Amino acid sequence: MADQSQVIKTYFSGWDYVVFGSLFVVSAGIGIFHACTGGKQRTTKEFLLANRNMHAFPVAMSLVASFISAITFLGTPAENYIHGGMYWLFAFSYIGVGIFTIRIYMPMFFRMNITSAYEYLELRFNKAVRIAGMLTFCLMMVIYLGIVIYAPALALSAVTDLSLWGSVFSVGLVCTFYTTIGGMKAVLWTDVFQVTLMFIGFFAMIIGAAVKVGGFRRGWQIAKEGGRIDFFDFRPDPTIRHTFWSVVVGGTFTWLAVYGVNQSQVQRYLACGTRENARKALIMATIGMLLVVCAACMTGIMMYAYYADCDPISAGLVEKADQLVPFLVMDLFGKIPGLPGLLVSSCFSAALSTVSSGLNSLAAVTGEDIVKSIYPNMEERKYTFITKVLAASYGLLAVFMAFVASQLGDVLQTALSFFGMVGGPLLGLFSLGIFFPCANAVGAIVGLLSGLIAAFWINIGSQFYPPPLEDPPLYTYNCAARFPGAISNISDYSVGFTEYPMRTGFTEIPGTIGAPDDRPAIATMYALSYSWYSLAFGSTTLIVGLLVSLCTGRTRSSTVDPKLMCPIFDVMACCLPERFRSKLRCGIRYEEEKEGEPELTNVNYIGVSDQADKTTEEPV
Image 1 (cartoon, helix red, strand yellow):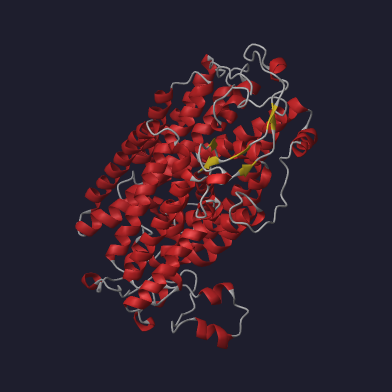
Image 2 (spheres, rainbow, N blue to C red):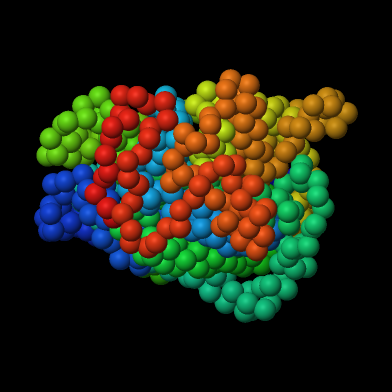
């Protein structure tokens, strides 16, 4: 192994700092503009849902921006660089996600005319299930936001002279500022600005690296010769990290948990006001996500072609895969004043977009599910002020969580898996209520807890007995010539990664235990690919929830409001004869819906006697 050299740092010029600072100035300015125009964020309807009259385009761009977190911006190119291009197949999963969301989950939330997605759980089950789902979401999101703030700051400070904590506080405080004063409108329009910067960053890296290696065709050929172009692994083994089945099928359920039932996405659909606008937004967002994954994966392919003869990690030029993208930016464009600042802004734009949507959604669920439950008759002005305070408080909490993340070592990877592990059980919880009229509240809570326990058990076990990972080789035979001032005493060699890594996210960390000769039989279960987590733990929630419901007294179909259910076989299997579909409806009588009709009316709250007389909300 080569002697490890000190990580190269490149210094920003004055123009870089001007361009980088402009990102925060423009984002804050958008927040100030929306705080001073329109209704001036005086009502919760405007603050949380943008008055339910947003155009589909900014909502679509916001959905795309939320998809591109800073971790995605840094991690997807690194994934393709180290492991190969199988990640590209996630593009197929987004098509399925769009179809299922538009046909099944989105109409459900519009029918109820709600603000918090977890209101559905009370309508369908009871308040305890609603609070359980909401608390699970809040715990997941607070931890994730702290990591989203800390991860890019750590990666960029390692290869530039940017201050780590200066970056953390800048992202946290600016994002909290414009989200708190500008509400959902500021979140949506800053996302449009930020997603534009993200695409500029991806395309600049792709073109810059392609020019250096002799064009796109030459870069693709280098990557192919290096084993990075392989899309035809159809092995059914669920322990293999990425195969066609794990990426396409497992990936569909992974992202369905995000776009189907996650509060931050549901809130954006509802901001469109009508189902038709929301459908348009999601269709455009699906196209945008396809472009994003293609751009991010192509960045990784061109990055490999550029560093095919000198891997920066093996040579000690960077410490972790998370730093490859900022290292590439500074290597390609470090001598062009202002351009590194613009491209680094692309990474922080990804962080700002994810954090702002998270803060707004956390304020919404806490206000709707906790504050309104305690003080149902609170006057509108006071409630709006409280939701703003909640958004600001969660912003400060996210900054604090960034500090906690700095003390926990490799918490970045753990948090990524945690985000995936929690999404599956929540998807299973909502699906239990939507598809199975026999499910009851006891089954829902036990099912959710079972899914979460199984998720943590498997993930913790995978830390002690990580699965083997076979990656294409990386080379360093030309490092001395390419980086003569930084590399010394390095011999020609190649590094082939066939190790037992700590697999919890996009960065692979060599493990110290779990070699084949001392792995117990149960280690095979711990080797489950993270791509299957959402399906596996969502199914656990569903199966346990159904069994417990049947054992504790199933809910009678006649007591369930049809508008709280989805006629899944009518929606997804309409070609079946009516005599078969009628039996599959489990006794539920569904009425045909018409676009524009009044939303959910005179709902029977199953198990919530104190609210059984609740009347209809204002139609969308």
